[in-house]
Amino acid sequence: LAIRFCADNPGLQNVTRLCHTKSAITVNGKFPGPRIVAREGDRLLIKVVNHVQHNITIHWHGIRQLRSGWYDGPAYIAQCPIQTGQTYVYNFTIVGQRGTLWWHAHISWLRATLYGPIIILPQRKASYPFPKPYKEVPIIFGEWWNAELEAVINQSLQTGGGPNVSDAYTINGLPGPLYNCSTNDTFKLKVKPGKTYLLRLINAALNDDLFFSIANHTLITVDADAIYVKPFKSNIILITPGQTSNVLLKTKNRSPNATFLMAARPYSTGLGTFDNSTSAGILEYEQPANSSSSTKIKNLPLLKPTLPSINDTSFAANFSKTFCSLANAQFPAIVPQRVQKRFFFTIGLGSSPCPKNKTCQGPSNVTKFAAFVNNISFTLPTTALLQAHFFGQSKRVYTTDFPKTPLFPFNYTGTPPNNTLVSNGTKVVVLPFNTSVELVIQDTSILGAESHPLHLHGYNFFIVGQGFGNYDPNKDPANFNLVDPVERNTVAVPSGGWVAIRFLADNPGVWFMHCHYDVHLSWGLGMALVVMDGKLPNQKLPPPPSDLPQLHEIRIF
Ligand code: C2O
Image 1 (cartoon, rainbow, N blue to C red):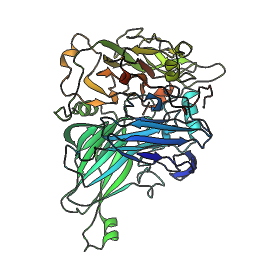
Image 2 (cartoon, rainbow, N blue to C red; image 1 turned 180 degrees about the vertical axis):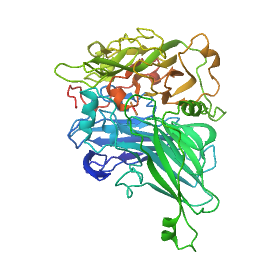
Image 3 (cartoon, rainbow, N blue to C red; image 1 turned 90 degrees about the vertical axis):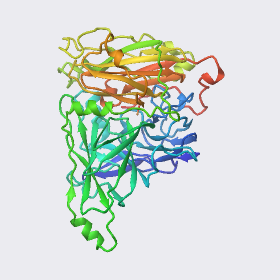
Image 4 (cartoon, protein in one colour; image 1 turned 90 degrees about the horizontal axis):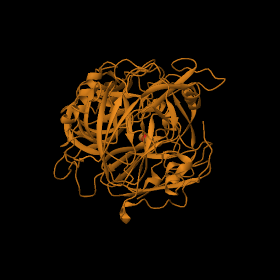
């Protein structure tokens, strides 16, 4: 299957929202970007031509990239950026995944406007493990800033200031009627009565978890991150940046005398300011032919959904516990039962010294915000880790001494330590091929407890346990679910709590693991795993393609 992100289309496009027009980087002039529709087993060839004055890479979020890590996309991890005028053909096969994933730029914060759905249909003749929906509709959540993106990024990077507050959340790129000057930019879903619709939800927002609900309708979740789950009903969905989920919407048997608001609004336990506004779309029923249609629809009452309060942590915990994999004969859950390597990672926010001659907006004006895994704030290298690894130049680029446990243990959910300073480094964990790994990720309270969407490239993992407070290695493993845990690529590590994940390191390459809030990623909440080749030919990463962008040391922003 060949898909072309057309070379003759402009990269820059004027986009207007909330009465502000700005020039945005787009794919083929579209915002949000084009959708990719493929089937499980398809090979995708996607030619990316860079027509803008910024370095670019594209990441295929959640695609496993089995032995195709050269096409994974994160800048300076899997590849050097595609520079202005350059072309790179991403070339990968979808193996064992069906559902919804997405693609986005993976450099700086360019994914603010560079993102779109990846729809993976089951193989021909295969069917869904639920009744075939009448229609399928992608619903992709995003964030909109009136300001130029560069200014937004600079605030968080140069001054290390608090999270940048966007001006609106969006549904399929549209803020909706609850914002000023936005009524015409409203996503509308027109439905027929008595049908089932499959909504393909994607959270592409940069920095916010979102609640989503449709007034007077129940949703049935059937999949998470392109893996089927045991179906469950709920009125409200919580989705963290990076995650995707397919939900069934069964429409009412007769067209009701109302239209319905669908709404997305953040879940946040963090510090400081955030945008507590609501993006909305409209669910509109086709009216019977005899009713004088359009004027009538306008006059129908608009019903609104109720969403949890912004910091409803118990809703968040209960909702995430509801997910279990199908774990049946056709779709088994192959959970590693024995563990060869255990890791304990603390994640959170701290601070680092303010650069000379700058005023910083961090925890104090001599520090800026930094984020860490095990007290190390990740520094992006200036050459790609995967190239350095593959060509035996790793010593120049990274060190293999990433700590297995935190350097300074403390009561992670109790009184914060006095010293919030972190150290910087490009450190990795090296794993032999086929190691079975257990990783416990502990959220810390250093600058306030906050949930973090942790995303692992190149893998799905099983979420075998989660809880509040400090993880207890003597007690908690007894409650791990090793039977039907949900399998995902992104997990929301709960505010003031922990999660335990397991996976088999069967995909050789260099894989980024990071917080999917761009602000925390920029502050260093990430690290990389280097998974070595196995002995057999089909356990090795093949050499890179000839058009892989060259090693170079130019950075943007
Ligand atoms: Cu969707 Cu490394 O990210």
